[in-house]
Length: 199
Image (cartoon, rainbow, N blue to C red):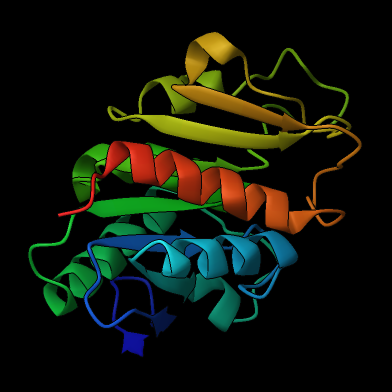
């Protein structure tokens, strides 16, 4: 599904059960794609628990850019993407999330998009080796419950428990969360089941 935004087209791959009870919109990091092991694992687990899942390729990636560019433009495009997906799934509670840079976008836009919750996979708390450049304010400003799932060896840091609703640290995992991605999926689905009751 191609989606027009103010900053170029985006592409969404949507999977849904027969009667979805919520919509989860996920996106990639600055360099990766929507087929990363953790995003696929979250998709599979959430589909199994009754959620529709849209994995979004953002406009900058479709253009072939190596970096997201302006955060303001990225966020504006994201809100347009989510609005289009919500029109396709009217009445469903919205959850949004992503990995790394995508988790930052999901947190920054949660209020504007009307998200009920955010899933932040490998949230990059700071650039490697630069803990003084914390991005914790993005987590704190989401305005809705945030689940952060991080690897215990992530060089981009691990969020503080005080800045999120729930923090899951996966021992031995790095930034890519690729050793046991099914664990990330299970944690996400379990948390969403608690936050969005059936029916």
